[in-house]
Length: 64
Image (cartoon, rainbow, N blue to C red; front, side):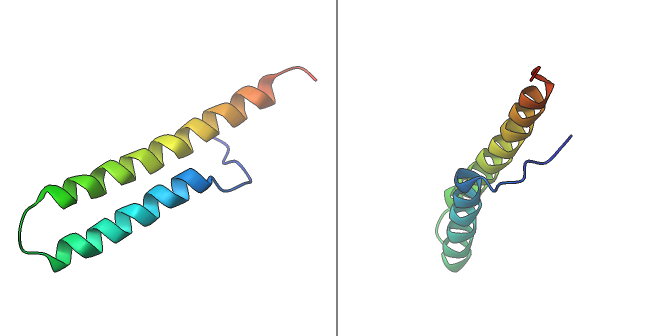
C-alpha cells in the first residue's frame, strides 16, 4: 500500500491529542476513562492514514 507523500494534519493532531491525554491520564490517579480517549484518538489517526492511502491508490488508478 503506497504511503502518501504529504502529511495528514488531522492524523498528526489526533496523535498529538492522544499524547496529551496519555500524559494527563498518567498524572491522574482518578479514573481510567482518559485512557479510553487515548485509544480513540489513536484509532482516529490510524483511520485517517488508511483513508488517505486508499484515496491515493484510487487516484493513481484513474486514467490520465
